[in-house]
Image (cartoon, rainbow, N blue to C red; front, side):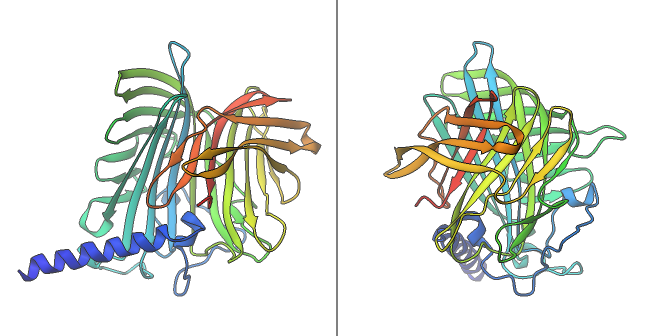
Length: 363
């Protein structure tokens, strides 16, 4: 009876944590509402790989995040998303030996699969101390329950260069192989990503150069696909500024081989904050500070009972880029504990391409 009661208390405590997360208008960023006792990002980070591909328990929150634009043999388009989140209920020092339910680490995963007519979502939760979820740097693996991102890099390769990726929901699943065709991209100022003029920041890098092949499974059966993928790694202990209500984030693969990441952090009390990064067709990377890129919504769509800006114009005047993005499926709403819009997009204008758009805070 005592053991059963303890399990119930743990479960209810876990549910209370997730309920608090989902109540935040800032979505994922609101999960890090108190940084006291946790490590904070500092300028001029010195990343160490493969160690930094693994978890950072002295920081409040981090995630491993993959999106992929895929095409079947018949030309039909698909998009997938895979995210593993780690959030700590209290600071954990390197010597912390808390195990089982006493571990402060909470994990949850989101997955999605989208085509022009359908949008599937799934979420799963776990506590890291009992082995249900976690991440290791070498060999690289990140998992939650039976969802997994597993490294299979060879000698001399970065641990993220070759990955197996899988997840499933009630009506979908996917199993994909990712192979990097270029180097890791450090976002922001050499990996120090400032989120507002007030100084909130994260450590942030990406691997935007994956080629993908594999299979997606839908109610109609399996579909063989190929395409491109983008991985983000980010960790911090700081929430957004109190007046920042959410973000609109793009990762774009352009047809000439260039890559563009840009996001708008919406601010109720002042101008929005819009940093970006660009990798040219020659592989040269460039940080674009706030103000260099313009993001303008040009069309809203009624989605899940709310108006969401699903079509956008993106202008980087100094780079000769003036594009518009259109979603593959306007109804790509992730109706999860933390609700948000996320789905594949197509790019037209001065550049052609494809990519992903994520929008939080439209609640």
